[in-house]
Length: 475
Image 1 (cartoon, helix red, strand yellow):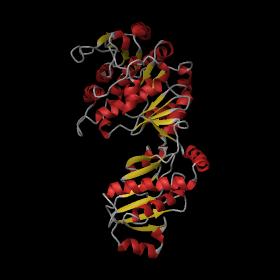
Image 2 (tube, rainbow, N blue to C red):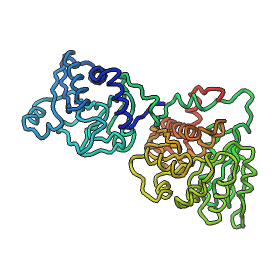
Image 3 (spheres, one colour):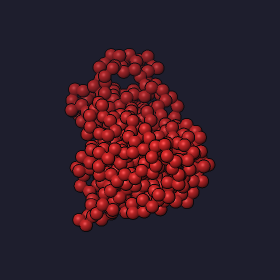
Image 4 (cartoon, rainbow, N blue to C red):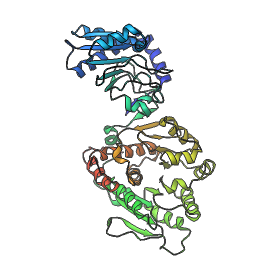
């Protein structure tokens, strides 16, 4: 996992490093890293013209060291202040020359205020130092008109503002520079990567059987059977050895997913009640339960979902209509009280209903706050997906693509989470397992069509992507 530290945490690490290593050494290392990335972008420095926008702080010093590094290698470098656009002589200089690269070292992660950079010719690539100037280090919100970077050289560790909101769009490719500061013991936030799936999702042992990773799914009702099928397919392709699918008020087409055991809880037009007790019985041999997609929102359904959440003795994934059944913030707290083995998977609208407030662009803080409020892990779905647990740990997933903005992809995700939980014996790590599922969901989408990808394409792609990963044994 890749550590992420807040601006305040980074400030503390910097202060310790100043004492142990020395400020000048850190600046030299940072500037060298920036210079090396500039060389890589340009394919060499000789004869190139480079503009460095350098502020007064350490970020600007990094830029000046990079400038010296590049001049030593034959580049022509102009260094201008952040307010160059307001200085006539400076504006004239920028208009006079054609630049091959701009190094943005105006302001770092501690930026406050509004930043309007000098006007540059269209198409000049920008290399940002630590974060695009004008982007807030913790929230990722842009103030003013920050430059769009093709790459950002990040010092020591990622910052929240680089992976969410405007910062995620403006930072380009991220390169973490090792300048001698260890953030691994400080970070409570981590970005998921391929290796984490391999290390934490166990392969099937030689003596495995279907019940060892069985998943029960309660989803679907008359007119909403697609949600149930997508969820079940996601669980199967994620490695659930058996899927038992309980549905309300309708029949599941047996040919749709023949491997799934169908459990009708009532037929359309008939009265059905107290189905939660039947589900608890059916789930008794399973390792996880997913509840919500396509169930409906009638008072009777809400009541039964709440009974299920309070009484089923295995880990749960709660999505869609399951989240609706939680009700208001106070009702949700009451329903979830005493449970630690439940993962909630809201999108922003569902999260806003649970909190009573709209969700800000600071997704990391929003997910952490909601998890603390409800006392269970929360997976906040979105362009940057964040999974947080009540202890304050957060896992960030940036593998998703716009291809996933399709009806039903969330149902597939809830099934993948259920399948992964069933595969993992340690239920104390539900937030991590949910994050791994979201990561695989995103990576799988990258294997699919760039246009026209639909939710039912994703499960097969999940199996394809997982087949490329060498999973570990013994977890």
